[in-house]
Image 1 (cartoon, rainbow, N blue to C red):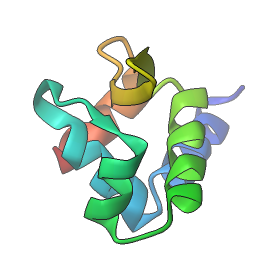
Image 2: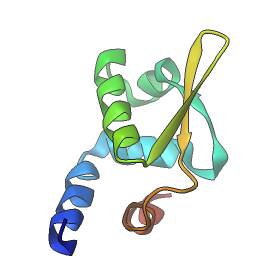
Image 3: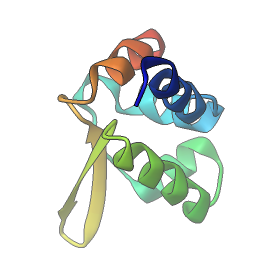
Image 4: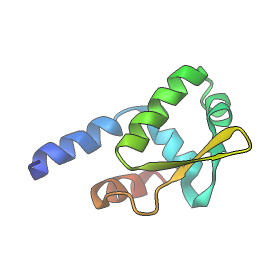
Length: 90
């Protein structure tokens, strides 16, 4: 993928206020469940899950299941282009 196309993917992924808020919520090593994030965003769990899935597919987030819940957190090894872009919002 060319550099310009890759940046298009990065900017499209981060061009949503709720996804930026998710990055901000999870900064500093914080882990949150889908329900917790949905309550903070004041949107449905389904919409929240869609945002989280997209960010996870792009390797911005990681997920870990514990005690019947899935907790999301920032991927410490996220691609450098996303790391550079998301550092502006943390």
